[in-house]
Image 1: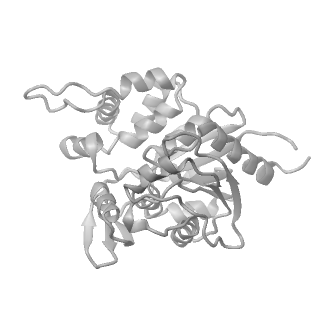
Image 2: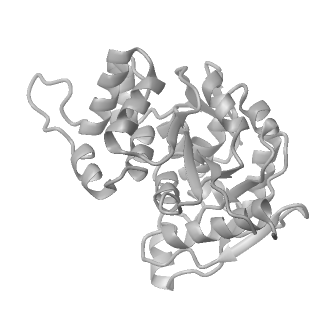
Image 3: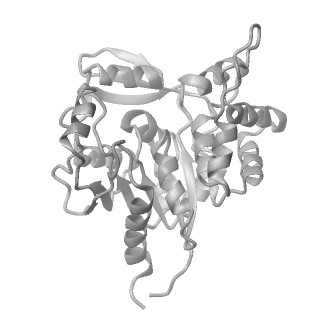
Length: 323
C-alpha cells in the first residue's frame, strides 16, 4: 500500500457533521472538507438571516470550529451567547454567528467570509456552503399537507407525519467553486445528521448531482443511530440509501452503521421521543455494510474516533489498495 493524502468531502450539517470532522482532522492522511447545508431557519441562524439578510451561519460555524486548531477554546468563546439587553437587536446570538455574519457583510462574499474565519481559527481543510442562494426547505406529508422551513418540517415528522417529498423554495444552485471542489474529492461521506433537513436538502441544490457524478471515488453513508420521531417509524438505512441514490443518480457504495446498542434504560429515554434504533434494512447488493459499535455513551452520538478509524479503513482499502 502506498499512502497519500485523501481529499474527503463530508456532506451534512447540524451536530452530526462536526463530530465526524473532529475525528477526521486528526488523521494526517485525510484532508477533510465540509459541504454544509445552508437552509437553516431556526434559532440564531434563522433570526440573522431574516434581520440582516445574511446566509444562515450556524452549521458553517460549527464545522469550522470542529476543524479548528484549538476547538475546545474556540467553541467556548464563539458559541457563547451575547446577553439580551433592552433595545439590543443582536442579544441572544452566539459570538461566532455574529462574527461570521459581519464578515460576510464586510466582504460581500460568504465564501470569502468563511475563508477568513478558517484562517482566524487555524482550520484543517475547508468548509464549503453548498449554495450561497437563500432558500427554505419545504415538505409534503403523506396526508397531503405542506409546510415550509427547517424547524417546521422537523416538527411535522416528529409529530407523526410521514415526509413524502421535500424541495427547496425558491430553487437554489450550487456555487461554481463548490462544484469544482466536489469533482476533485477522492471520496464523499453523507451524514450523520437529520435526514430531511440536514442531508437531503444538499442534494436538492441544482448542480450537486452533476458534480457528484464527476467525482470518481466512493459515496459513503454514515447512518444515523436513531430514527427521528413518529413520522420515521420503521425507516431504515436502506430507505435512506434509496432516497439519496434517487437524488444523486449514482450508487451509495458503503454504509457505516451501528451494530451494538446501549442499555434498555438509555433506549427507553429516546423511545419517549418516538426515536428508535435505525436498522440497516434490506441493503442493495452493490452497497457494502461496515458495522461496529459507535454508540458508546448515554447520549446518541457517534464516538468520533471510532467513526474516524472506521472511515479510514474504508478509504484506505478502496482508494489505496495493495502495494
